[in-house]
Length: 390
Ligand SMILES: *Cc1c(COP(=O)(O)O)cnc(C)c1O
Image (cartoon, rainbow, N blue to C red):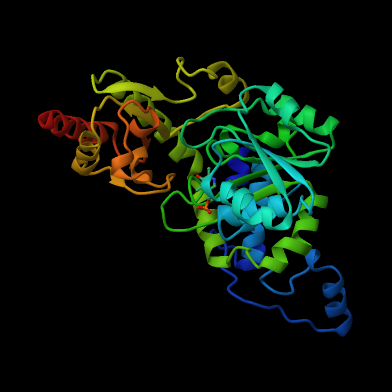
């Protein structure tokens, strides 16, 4: 399906709502029935009927269909956050005694699920370096039911060879789950490469304006229906109609925003690489990136998020740099209109800072929709204030 068609028309039935161009927000908790038999049928098969908005809702449905089409998946469920999508995808595929192979460096709340919640139910995990397929082979046990991927991850961007992992998993009867937030289905379609479940946060690129949270989970119809009837309805972590409407709106401009951000990111990277204070820029589409070839092979684009390592012998220098930024905001998240920065050293105690540690000197930058010159001028004055300190 053509992407323009998916984003502008697909799954929208305007004849049902006064031919309005923008779909209605069907803000209702429940749906009425005329006959007992209809109600009975709905109880028997909630996944095909409007019964209650914790399950299906017409506004949410438009979003689900568009997102499934974007991922080239049979079906999609949307959640009230990306974390909720991760939770449902993993929980649906483990039972007591099972084992998960996960790449290291995954999103914080996936990690917390593996480390803090699942061990209470006797589900164990092994973290591996996912850049080498041999590490997957070595880590798989007889009780491994899930391989959890994030390619690239959102700090240092290590990739996994998705096709190779999918083949290995199928041989061993293991479900593969990927967090595809960084690329979004516009730039990487894991299901086409053989991955079973592809999830992403909708809070970042899809929402695009830092005003809504959401999560997306795509896969085949059988798996989605199973998750709907258990984790989705039981946890009650489905998406609200208004949030779905905001995300449909976000989708309209997604390609235009990503194209713009791609251009600006390239300019910002070119600038950063010339700075005497910058030791290294980490970005998968940079020729110096160790997995550059694989990135080019399995991703059709990439933008916005990059990490740079600053040459600093004190934490004060890094803090001065960050505190001096006037337009680039210091905040978590990414994917919105506004550029953002997070220094790695915010995650450690000041006393623990080691100038020899590359991690401690990393800064993650998200390039938003501002002009490149505007952002570069902001970085420039922040580097100057850092210099005046030394
Ligand atoms: C933000 C993020 C999530 C979680 O999404 P929320 O919508 O914030 O719950 C998951 N994975 C990655 C890579 C993220 O950046």
